[in-house]
Image (tube, rainbow, N blue to C red; front, side, top):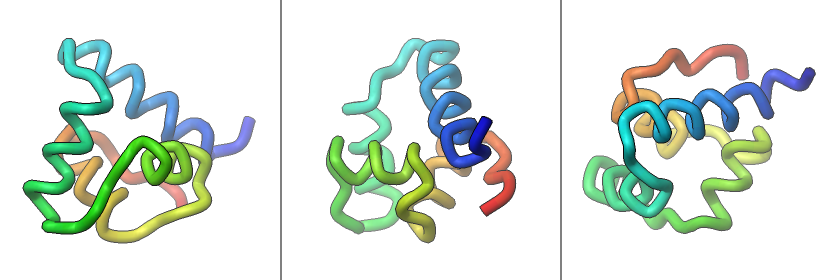
Length: 69
């Protein structure tokens, strides 16, 4: 399996574990980074198409490992 998709699964599983949804995560990312974030960007991050500050912020917010890029 693609490690990029593993990141998306990890994020989604963590959201379920903490009983939060993607909309909550998007707001947290916006607050933390000041950067634009929406469902489309999140899906691209899950697929490994986009990396950088938003992905790093997601890892910090959810307290997960960033893993291989």
